[in-house]
Length: 238
Image (cartoon, rainbow, N blue to C red; front, top):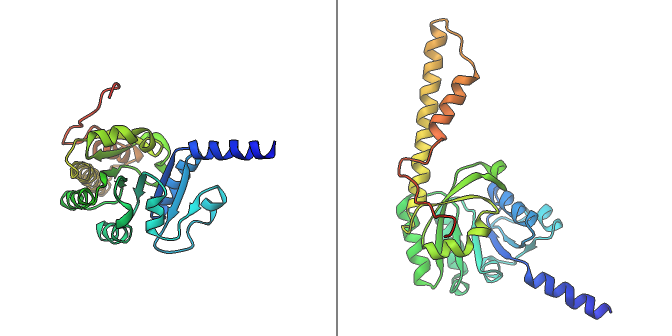
């Protein structure tokens, strides 16, 4: 009986969806937590030690190095500060990259996103670029959104896993489009917020009271809508 129970437990463990998550800053930790909440087998690695304690207590596994993390799952999610860190981490795991799907959720320029996608393709890995539109507190909420770009078949294959984190807004095959859309939306937000603050300062200088509704309106103008590029959305059947 004990042997049968152990085999059943092992079968259940092997049937769980899995993900490797590299980068345990505030955003990466939030993403790891969302995957654990969704029942995923989660393997973690971070360049600086000591950030995984509570996640390990919840069932995550800490890899010994970047290569071991990449080897642990087909889907590899990166939450790193810029593409210099991305290239350094992936170079250390180069032998494990063939056949992997790498989702890069760090921020940089569209050209660097394209460079990373080419580099990964040369090593037999697929690449999706993401532009997360929310802070860590928005991770795990379906109403939140992340832009994605890269091969559409790769996006379709891993869409369910990506939607554990946020809603997924696919922008097209060009790996740089997610970063471009992210930058456009960020620019709209900060431009609108700056205009709002200027308007409030002018109003107060003239003795006109302002309230929070002005700031809410500005935030809506800066962040609402589909973005200046227009979304390339997949239908429900896709």
